[in-house]
Amino acid sequence: MTPTLRQLVWRILLPILCLDQVIKFWVKTSFAIGERMPFVPGILELQFIENEGMAFGWALPGTLGKLLLTAFRLVAALGIGVYISRRIKEHAPRGVLTGLTFVWAGALGNIIDSAVYGRLFGRSGWGTLAEFLPEGGGYAPWFQGHVVDMFHFIVTWPAWWPIEAWAGREIFPPIWNLADAAISVSVIWMLLHQRTYFPSVR
Image 1 (cartoon, rainbow, N blue to C red):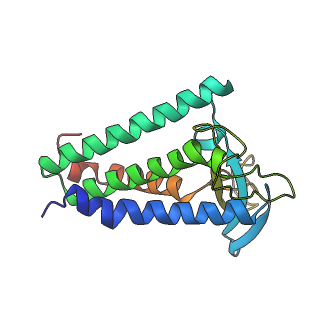
Image 2: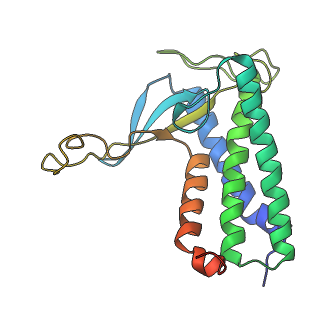
């Protein structure tokens, strides 16, 4: 049975979105920039950084660039919501709708950071913690906040790895958040199952 949009929102989108924001709030108010803490020993650590742009630190320059990026995120999130509604009417497979909702939740999670964190938090620094400022007056105007990232894989390629340039280096150095993970995992999942979910694609 095809889930409704309401079911997807309550069962998938809101839980992911709330957990993403709880983690970000805790990290933002408990860690200084660059501060680290073991999470899964030998595999994953928490390391707080702020991302001014898109994934992997890509950014558009200046205030206008930041506003354009946030506007693009808002339009993309709206488009994803509309697309999910259409796929529900077409009785798309549950896996497709679940994957798209994960992407939607991830996009909205990072939009919240960009849209409101600049007003609601003081500036994070090296050795200083940010304050939560519910009455406003934060480090940046509306829609110009930074995205909070914290998860860092610390697994490295073994020293004997045949590709010398990789040996001893981190397998996946970017630092990411739960919203990024929701997007990445769902996209990979749908690509692996594209022949099942999209039989017309070859």
